Image 1 (cartoon, rainbow, N blue to C red):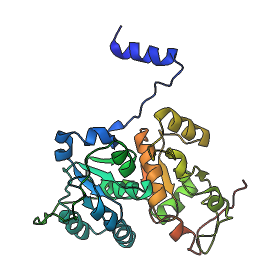
Image 2 (cartoon, one colour; image 1 turned 45 degrees about the horizontal axis):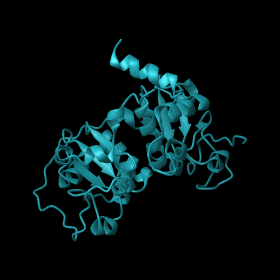
Image 3 (spheres, helix red, strand yellow; image 1 turned 120 degrees about the horizontal axis):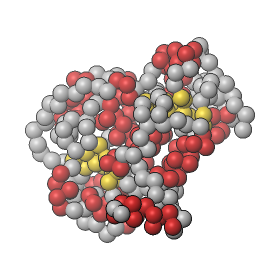
Image 4 (tube, rainbow, N blue to C red; image 1 turned 90 degrees about the vertical axis):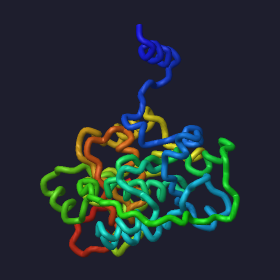
Amino acid sequence: MTATLLCSLALLALGQPSKTYARPDLLIEAAELAKPENAKKFRILDTRAIQEWDKARIPGSIPVDVAQWSKKFTREQDAPTWEKLLGSLHVDVDVPVVVSGEDVKEMARVWWILRYWGVKDVRLLNGGWSAWTAGNHAVDRRPGELPDWRPTMPKLVPAEKRLTTLEQIKTSLKEHTLQLVDARSEGEFCGDTKTAKRSGAIPGAVNLEWKQMVDGNTNKFKSAAELDRLFKKAGIDLTKPAVTYCQSGGRSSVMAFALDLMGGADVRNYYRSWAEWGNADDTPIVAPKK
């Protein structure tokens, strides 16, 4: 009997789920990142406000202006522009990256944008900055200084299937080709909370709020068994194409990450989300009942 089988039987005997993430490589625990060989391996991007990064940070980490990234990506997906931006951080498609921070939404946003631009190995620090400090790992409290290095120029090729547009969703509504996952609150989904010119949901979408993907106490992603139950309860089929959306791309990035983590076969993000759909005049909208 193999060790793996023995472990599985032991877990079953204890009444614990044995299911694991399909893509555990998308997450890294603080204790793993703290190992010297790993700290040197990864480019660590910090999504907190630069003032917070300046006061205390993971040694060697670099601050990222998430608001700038979000506005820039919403406005344009111009490869030369992003090559210049990522090159200034010495990020390339073959450079392993870890994204840290305090807000899972902003961490996931940066993760998703990097994956869109073809960076092959991008991981979230599970639990972010709070997990790092809770583990009593090394913290650099010296005045923050950005590396004085010469910018590189990566060659970026967009993973276009990771991004969905308004017109693509309109087409899918006619052909019923995509699962739509609304990562907003129930109030937004039902049209009770107004965040745009028009309120409600995209027809056929299921509502699964992004907060349910994460443990509220630790900021870590829930177990594979818990995520599996949530997706099944919502009627989400991981073997079929799924599009996530929210208001402006952050919450939908968390949902896209969770779907990828669980092995979603074809996960896409409608990045412009309700800020675009709800402010358009010709988009179909429904107001589902609670």
